[in-house]
Length: 402
Image (cartoon, rainbow, N blue to C red):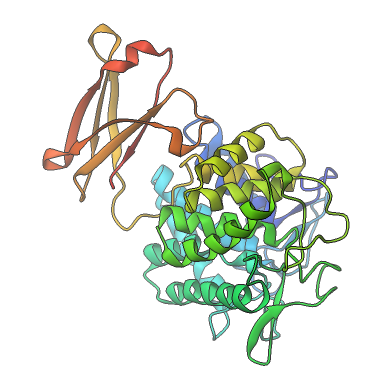
């Protein structure tokens, strides 16, 4: 339909809900850099609403063929989680209450159709069997944001369940590596890796093209929400990663949970490597983080690899903000001052403590930004002069309230 947008998933015009979710997240995050970001976001959002799940119309059908005709199909959990998160972020980004209303309805549909009574996540609204989940659907940063937006305790329980499942998988099935499988099931009251060909193929029980996203998803929560559970899970993973790989480029495309190679994994790809940079950021491994970011920014592969890599880079660069427990600090004005200086004014409420970071290169990892100023905003407001701005042809600023 004219004015709508979709992500070309496979080069044929087919798309999937996962791709629409990635596209909506990226559109929100690039709003400050792309004047068309909101137009893209709204077009993607209209597209997803045209294709509801045949089981629960509050969710999106998981696959839409190139012809874009009538489709009768069910949903996939990860796409719906990302689209709901993107709507919440859009409300914060552009201030339109319509996004919040849509997100609220979306969260209610997800809670009804995709969360089991034990708070584990179904693979989709079609997944009626108990004890089956996809570890890469564990998005604790999303669930914390959902709780902050809706105040519904179900999301705190889902967040805790995700960590508990990952803990069990690492402890019992991957104690030496901290790896997670593509799919997991319950057997004898324990979460274990699924067997081969459980749903998608021979590597369903291995660390493969679904679970390669786990370090990014968990690392996001470790970075933004400073969650100790997330850091603990990533510490196990990074201990094995750095002890068995000389550099990020040596991390291969798939492993068994004991760290041995799966068949055909003898190549490097950004969807496996870039998430390790998020894990490195969360565990303060600066050398690995820098190397991963350098690797990621020069890669161009396909839809999936590039999407996962770019979203990971947003976290690594400190730009993948989420819903905060209080109002985020903000610049209210940045104007030229005398002698080519810049005057920066802003608000920091309710926490009046602030720090300002600066860089001349947006491709640098967040940890490499230069500390410019910090202090206490009297009455919740501040104004400072950047005397160093005269030395640079361009300057980017970031405001934080620790």
